Length: 386
Ligand SMILES: *Cc1c(COP(=O)(O)O)cnc(C)c1O
Image (cartoon, rainbow, N blue to C red):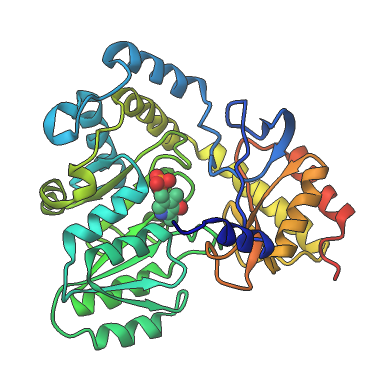
């Protein structure tokens, strides 16, 4: 049998080895990690709802009513009243005829792409799309064309030569590692011209951008006519877990019939759906949290700019600092960790070669003092000097 050790050693030598930390506390700006209190800037809990008392109480009530597990897939007996109510509320929230719950965003992307495309069809993707959108394409057996990040002229060229067959354009709404937005109005126009479907994965935009947290599509003033397929996740700003796809009646019925990652998996616990219903109510009423988050983003960017740090053009809670090499990103992360601050170093293949970075994420749960402490630690390390 082949030895696995050489590959593990290669990863380690190239600063690509990944390790897990063990967290002992609930989510929040201060985490107890591996026995140590750390100030954290790495979660996607943008609104601070993951440990909100109303969400936790709804999970507990849900467990009392439905027990721990769903017992089966949605198409057998796993589809509870809690799931059903949440789907109706997500459809209303996103202004779409229907929504369908998935157990994770990863599965939702595999399911949608696989249900809509097959051999002979075409899938166009931004080069920086999330891994699950890429995997969905590979599984579907459609031809895949990846265009340079946010390059609409390149997308236009691909679409003009797309030939016959169905065509789907898929993009992150708010890019998970760069924090910038897809140019959705232009993208929607190109898709409309070609008669292509547009799928927006808004894992990071929902709850954060748009009116009442309706996300990137709403931020651009677009709706279901221009972006027929919205995928949203519930483990980020919603603070719980799972995902959904929202769109037309025919889209959702097609997914129920054909999305394999929907059909062949156990429904998530009904109690979790109850928790998400509570968090959806909070998200819609969270204009004050979104306002505070914008103030923290402005505070961080102004401070980082004054220190000469390598900021990227992002106006969102995702604020990457470009390090270049994996070694450098890891060294920055380790230096901050020594000061009691946790920031994730993101390396290839999650980001392109040569663009390793610290991925700093801000949350409405952070205080001004905490962001100032982060800036102070960065100043002490002179991260901007080289
Ligand atoms: C996190 C994420 C996913 C996956 O969602 P999960 O529910 O965590 O599986 C998909 N797309 C994007 C852009 C993400 O950031």
